[in-house]
Length: 148
Image (cartoon, rainbow, N blue to C red; front, side):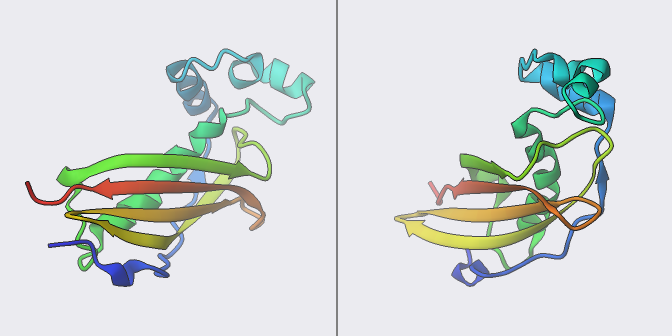
């Protein structure tokens, strides 16, 4: 089955709110070798004007993953996850993610392109805080390999 081109423009319901935890931020920072004190030490973050530790910019992928799971589970999408390769990732932040944030994400499919037997699906996840204010937009392009 090939990727359904009618996915373009489809929006998915908001994800369940995700409470950003201090230890999750610290674990993620260590995993991506982000050694900045504001990502590891609450006192350093507070001295820099933040309420708590600040997540590295790529932490948004943790919240985005919930939206991509919706897309991959869509019955008519035609996306076989065993054939998916991550093509690209972009983040546009209005402000940093901070421990204590309660974030919700909504996904929209912005593009489906066929490349021979393969397809590229671009999805945009808009992540907002508990007040509905924009925090970050995460854009992923997934390459769905065609049949061998």
